[in-house]
Amino acid sequence: MMQKPGLLLVVLALLLTGCVQPPDSPAFKPSGHTPGYTQESFDRYVDETKDWLKENRAFITDDPMREVEANAPFELLPEKTSKKSKGVLLVHGLGDSPYSFTDIAPLLAEQGFRVRVMLLPGHGSKPADLMNVEVSDWIKAVEHQTQLLKSEVDEVWLGGFSTGGNLVTSYALEDESIQGLLLFSPAFQPDSRLVALAPIVSKFFDWADIDPVDNFVRYDSLTFNAAGEYYRTSQQVRDQLEKKEFNRPVLIVMSEDDSVLNSQGILQLFEERFTNPDSRFIWYGDQPASKDPRVHSLRSKLPEQNVSNFSHMAALFAPENPYYGKNGSYRMCNNGQEESEATCQKENEVWYSAHGYTEEGKIHARLTWNPYFENLAREIRQTLK
Figure (cartoon, helix red, strand yellow):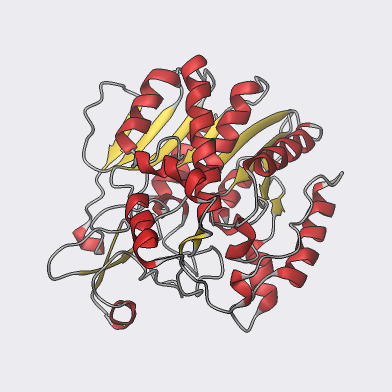
């Protein structure tokens, strides 16, 4: 899911200054094609995707194999067996990669699940590969991988982050055999209605935003085409939920201060359309005005940890994560601040927040880990029961 300023501002800037020109870099030149996703086995899908990434990814570090492994689909086998075999397919968000579930996947394997994390077409290689991808590619890829998993286990759950949450919810609304959903910042409803303009703007302009390429597990730059395809997934899932309730267990995790989603609107959708009594909504923020006993809130202002509020991505990662964690190797300073990113990188006393949050006298980087990760693990275990 995109974490950028309002689309209207981007459109106005383009109209005033002309089309955003990408640098002369491999990251901004699309590959000839995207990797296949209809292999007859998940192992072959993983192997062929890795081979494709080796040939087509625009590498940004001196460790190409580390980048391939972080962006490739992967599988974890269950740590314990049960009478019924269980599986879960996890789908990342717009611009992200399977690394989004590097900390969530082991929790599910511990609960006896065969865990598969797929790579959406157009991802994992270079931002330019989102220039021509269509939502139909994402839908077909999710459908194929779900059907493949269903043929190998007795019980299937689906999980998704952001745009991935839209895709798996849409699928599960049509397939009653899916046991339940695990949704992290599901992007059912964008914060701005202006995102609906993206499919139109994409016919005239390629790039909505171009940033330096320094994060090897997600794209920081965004094409208008990708923004438009995201919007179509949100429109589709809202249309489906208007016609049909989801009556199986679901866990939804969301920040009140999500910079790109209408968190209140998504909470309302949960209350009205996700009807199973065992469903749960974990809300990071002030206690919402909800009478639904399935909604549980946790405060997001944690000054003792230099946390001002929670970001769109924060739920996914453990504080110990070596890349995104509290003492991880990557600090996301591209966070909508007036201070330069260089100042943010050098500053010792940095605070953490959602994109665009400011507070006088403080420098904020993106909150990229979840201070309540152990609590989240318990909630996941409870939902899966």
